[in-house]
Length: 397
Ligand code: SF4
Image (cartoon, rainbow, N blue to C red; front, side):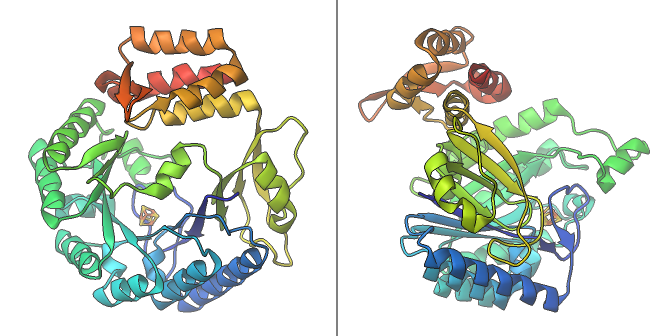
């Protein structure tokens, strides 16, 4: 059963200075047309096999899907046609290529949610990142999406060159002031091979300060909670009911299928075996419980040239450890059902020792949620996430 569908759009109008994602600077309408048409054809082939019949969420990401304009609307319509049980449908967009007209057309096509790459409401910081939009353009894009009846999420970044405590607070307040229901916060990282990394090497830029970024994350938590957005995941804040169901599927061990070069998929063994031939993916060994694979070439499933994938096979034990680790990203943590499954797959002593260590180190705590006991991250567990996740991921070995 595929629970979530991801489609990758590999185009942006220009590359941001920090970006190492699989996207290329492209303004060629013919390339957009060809890409959208081949993705629509691919969806048609998959839809006719009922592979997407049980899918509940879809997400078109990138890159910058909104550069496709009307072709994005056609792609969204095709997703809705091929995924009959869709409950949430998100498109990523950047403010400079998102208009009121596009917002209305996407809403009409069945899109329910827009995730906008805002990053900052400070024009100097946006320029330092090589972003193409301004703060005013971001406000206009958010207003256009809300006017069209779409739920809106706004990505913000901390540790940007030129950013100060005051400008971060102003960015948070500006985001809250727009009325968005969801905010995601990311620390800037300088990735090898990017223009910012070259500036760093040349001594023209300082590394983002981890203490400043930690302060920014804390300040975001304080201000967003005060504004009615609760942290349901380590980097995600939402008003009640505005959580991203698609991302929650990633963190709760649901099967997801990614289409497009560099798109990641994770399928349980049964679903993988059922879809493998249609996807052009390789056979896997007998003991594999879960398969994660990333498309490494441009060709889409069903095209003459068979797509290639980087495949990672997970045993029952590794899958259980991964579920615990990802579950601890969520504020509600992991419930007794998942813990019982992990004890069965990994061993009672090992799982309980990891839980005890998380409790002793103050990284996790038992909480009651709807009458059931959950192991949930504490504030320290949220701050020291890698230590907490490492405790559970180590159970895979
Ligand atoms: S818009 Fe996103 S994907 Fe495109 S270059 Fe910028 S960071 Fe990368």
